Image (tube, rainbow, N blue to C red; front, top):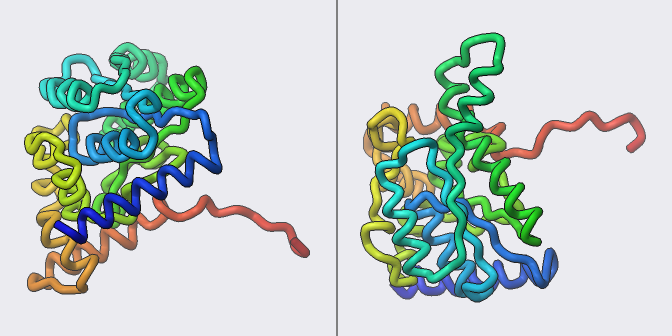
Amino acid sequence: MENYRKLKDDCVEWIKQFFEKNGKDCQAVIGISGGKDSSVTAALCVEALGRERVLGVLMPDGVQPDIGAAELLVRHLGIKHYTVNIREAVLGVVKNLPFELSEQSSINLPPRIRMATLYAVSQSHNGRVANTCNLSEDWVGYSTRYGDGAGDFSPLSHLTVQEVKGIGKVLALPEELVEKTPSDGLSGKSDEDKLGFTYEVLDRYIRKGEIEDQRIKERIDRLHEANLFKIQSIPCFVPEGE
């Protein structure tokens, strides 16, 4: 726990320094899902900036069965929050397209609309948008480019799932939020079911290079290689001489 406490303290200090340089009077604007990542991000920002400078945005897509977890988080932290249902926006895009969306496009559209919503809130409230992705999910591409993979600052992008959970416990967040099973909310399956391995296995491989099952290693390596474009800078043409 001492290691997690130091990680927490270092991250809080990093958030303070980010806002000192990039908006002394700005608020942290965070999309609140009720999962561990948004919960830990919000709690870190509260400790770094004070609850009066943290703004949560709940964005259900129609009816969200687990919306209670997000509501629990904002009550626990005592932060101001808005609820913006994105269902009509999603349906509006789908209805006006002259073709049927692919399955992957259908999955990625809501996260991208959520990010557009977060920036609308942020620009209207002198804010900076938090990216809540963690290292483990980014490692295997479990994020949506320009959706949850966007943001102005990213406290968790170099922390594994196990480290995020450890920080959540140090922050005394409700266990049901820290241990909430992550899922996309669409398929009825957990992230780990869809990936074919646990985050614990993935985290040990990332941090220590240790893994017993060669097939899982190959799958992780394949996913990592295929999704590197999501976390790398956009390729840019550079004219000769620059």
